[in-house]
Image 1 (tube, rainbow, N blue to C red):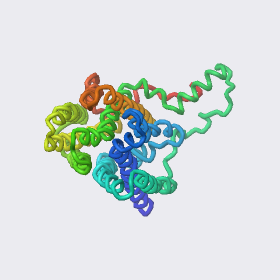
Image 2: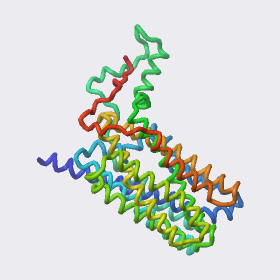
Image 3: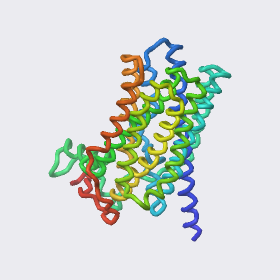
Image 4: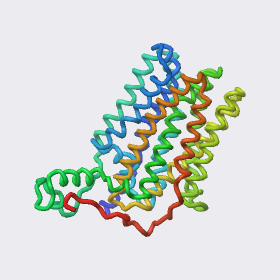
Length: 379
């Protein structure tokens, strides 16, 4: 009984750690987005260079994943610790994203006003350095540990296969390359790429867009905070939506709302409607919360348990690619056109395309086995 209680406590501590990690990582991106106009002016450079630099913050996550298993700290580890309450745990963990979007824009603007952009970056760096220390205290679950340890031969020499074939099999096994052939996993990966493009583009360029049309820095920062509040409320409504709709329908409907809010942003900016931008930001945040939760829920319910970490890894890689692409392309479009109109239209279009080509998949909760047999180095 004591062991069970300790296990439950550990699970919720992992959930809390995930929430803090989300707060730090998302808040940093939003902070740098607030500073983008100032950095562009200080360094007398193009928008896309600053935007690309900021997007490398989430972009490096994809690189680090294969080295240190970064996904284990986030959705992958949560899936290992939670079964019945996975949706609730993921909702609580991702509330860190909402709080990061709410708190950090105002804090960053305040620090910039008091200490300048250099002092602001110094303090933000010190704040985020706590993530390094806290990360040392976490120990992730092991990845791909088979019951029969002889399934991982150390020698590359086999009677039937060349050393090159054996090495290829080993790499494919450890990187879960077979997941790229799994339709359900591939849909989640594609969605994450489009979702990251829209979300990171919104985080980086929302405040610069508002400032560009004459809105004061603090009012511009408030647009981000309102989006964060919407995201927090959207996460809270996910359990209610689950009672009425399937995960797939939630994903499609909320992504459509995300698309409409992004597409409407240029018109509202043209009209200089602060109230309209407030509504658009709240709507974006509110809709994106359930969309993301539904996507991870689909992966949890349709991918076998020992492959969850692998799916989350590839989803994070796709997220990193979408983030870096958005940071560069959205800024480059602004440099070429002189406004964020086409940039936000592109954000909305990519968000919609991430789900439109995907047919609905069954909520195969009772079919945990993958359609493809697990590859091993010896097969």
